[in-house]
Image (tube, rainbow, N blue to C red; front, top):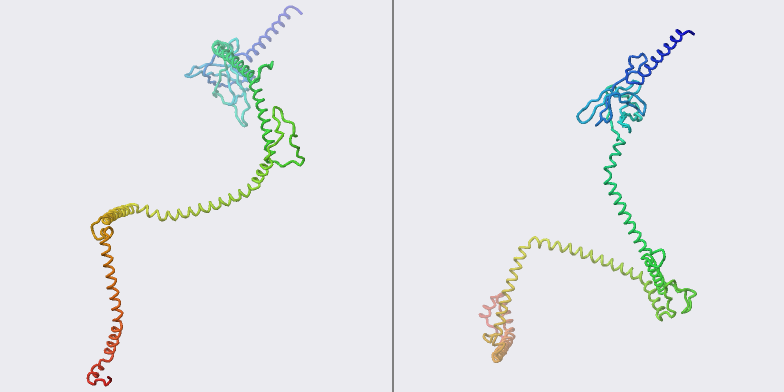
Length: 399
């Protein structure tokens, strides 16, 4: 192979390398590739964000980390920034995708679409669609905010210190309540448990005494002085029970047996009381029919009552005057009461009047036959008036 052929082959390789490198740069770089026969078509979208830190033209636009386009222009608007980007035609975007502006540690910014499962039947956005973008926090901003948190960390540490003090106080209170580990100091809880145990023992003793009073007499009753051993810290029951314990037990049992009868009598009494209350209710209702007209004519009734009171007052005055007249020695009645001579004269007058009435009665009795004969005579005259004339003309021969 001569030198000329070698140069030709090297030139062909260099030319092919340049062509291949240019194609790769155009496919993966910012240069448009639509002019290529196999080039990918693009469509434009807009992203509205409140701010665009680190965003510039040719900033890559990715979807789930895959490059799908680049920013072509930035427009400053009132209240935010509008970014216009060209997206590869074979990279469809759906309305539920969210673009996020993310800044690396080195300050490079990218726009990353977070893809979500589109709704069934949803269509990809058309060219010119506007997405609502979000700005993720910068790592350096987070570090710079640590300085602002210095005061808050100080407060938090102070709060932790206070919490430690409170825990120490709580531990001290717990030690006070339960006592220390050595057992030399008795805690409140231990004393409370001991007190509770003594109270339960006393309660058990009380229930035993109560059972002895109202419980059934055991078949194998123990002799006096013999009983079960006492509980802890409990005094043993007296060896000699009271002499009247049996009588008291019998009385209590008798009272319990009579309790149902007493309850029955109480129930009957309550029924009678209920009947009396119902009767009183009916009487009150009937009385209401009497008092209702009285309420309606209360004014007239009050006037009449005042008149009656005034009449009673006048009557009392007149009775007082009569009483004063009787007590006075003047007048016939006063003399009749206080003057014996006047009383004797009245008595004599009444005696004489009684004698006159007796004489009149005797005279009346004697006049009865005369009146009877006169009545017969008048009856005959009225019946046969001619007999008088005939008797006068022809006198009777009867002597």
